[in-house]
Length: 204
Image (cartoon, rainbow, N blue to C red; front, side, top):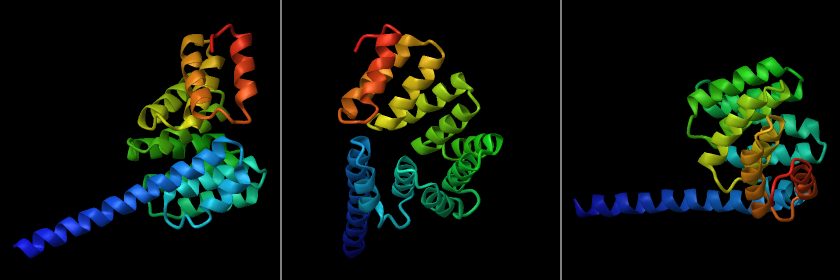
């Protein structure tokens, strides 16, 4: 009985360590991404393997670099996951988005958000897809949910701020943009965000 208890503790420790390592890896790559160091982010995330969150961030980094084919390949890797896996739908949505299939992108992302309600990227991808259809109210709500689930995700706050700016919700825009500026002080989007806030009379 004691041996089984020790074995259970060891397995639990290994799983905790693996999870913690993955989270740390994501945080490190995000710092590069947030600072506009997309090439470094790509290099750091190349060994992502089956870590869906890192694969998704790698694809976004490739998009920022203008490497659409490489981004599509990464999103397709997620889309190849089994039906029922929310990441399958996230990948499908992103591939559809790259292919200018706005309706397909929204449909797949909505399914991802329903199946993976606790996955920030599912709501974030839904926000991206809805933005493609200029449905700013629903997009803002989706980005808001992503930011709620992962408060340290600078991009979730950035896109929430953009969506709220389109809705003229200056209070909520300022809240998310200020959080974005705090989380990503070296972001290439910093000047753009500050300009939007000045134009719309928000304080920062």
